[in-house]
Length: 203
Image 1 (tube, rainbow, N blue to C red):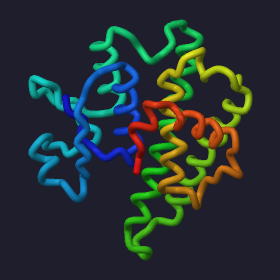
Image 2 (cartoon, rainbow, N blue to C red):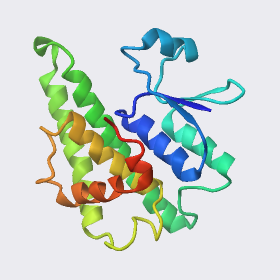
Image 3 (cartoon, rainbow, N blue to C red):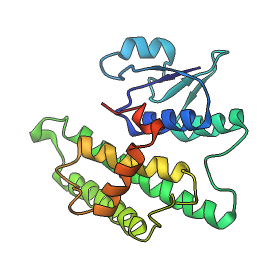
């Protein structure tokens, strides 16, 4: 299998880390949807990152769907099985994906010429990004220091939350800082020490 996309994308990176944690072998092709558009399009006309090219040529897109398929192949899930723990993990994953999404929107808006940027919309995006970071910081302040978010082993919640903070610091450090969200930042530092994270650096 091939995973297509740059690791500076939080969606590509969470998919790659998840595949590695599940023990699913894959080749990573770091193609950019900008610089390598034509090459990417030859593999997937949607030019969507991440793209998973299965061994039989089947194409999957969207990090959550790729992770779902990988869990089927592995015969195990990166999500807790109990209803309460699973709900808690889903909540954290959802908020982390919002943080990533809003950081992406911040990044792309700043690629526009200054006179073309929508200040009102950007202010709203920044507010949503701050709210997502605040929710995660609050949850992480009360999380046990000797365990992961949903138990003794890392789950998808830990992956998504860790990836989200690292990504915000790449593209939106001027908007959200470790000073404002110390628990979130400290947790991400802990996840980045995991071998699966260290092997798949975003830059």
